[in-house]
Structure formats: structure tokens, C-alpha cells
Length: 122
Image (tube, rainbow, N blue to C red; front, side, top):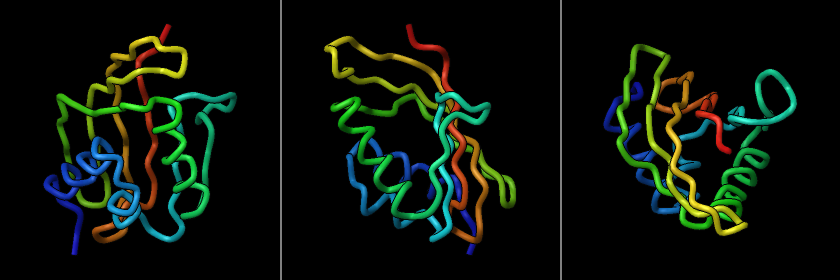
């Protein structure tokens, strides 16, 4: 089995639905998540299902009503990209409306790595 554009749409929908079990069903056991921000050149890196799951859940704490819209998903073999607009409300009550993308590496029909990039938020 291989990852498809429809799979990436389901993955993205699980994010907007705040469904951590559905999200993690798409991830490999040795998954890696690199955030769109952080002090290292790659952002902040989380490795393995437990770390990745915990960080994903924190997103809903950081942005309680996070939602992804205007999505475009591409798959080419074991690589993929999702472009999106992230909207939500930050902890301080400010609105977030920012474009970004995820670059993926797949193993079969699972996501092994997710590297997030987003426009700068002021």
C-alpha cells in the first residue's frame, strides 16, 4: 500500500477534528515531527510515537480551535506535500491566520516524517 492524496486529506481532516487517534493511525512507530518554529535550524524535533503524539495534542492546547483550510495535497512516491491555511485562536486570545505546508516522507501508507513550515506569525 502507498500513501495517496485522499489519505493526506483524511489526515488533515483528523487535525481539524482534533482526533489524535485518527492522526496517529497515519504515523509510523519511528515517526519524526519537526515543528515550524524552534531554536534549531529544523525547528524543534520530536521522535517516536509518544513524543509526536504528545506534541500534536499540545497544538490543541496552544491553539484551542485550530483548523486547516484551503488545502492542497501532493504525493509522489515516498514523498508528499500538503499546503494549507491554519486558523485558530492563540492562548492570549489573538487570532491566527497563516499559510504553511508540511513536507512528508512515507513508508508505505504511513507518515514517517512530517516537517512543518509556515509564514512568520507576528
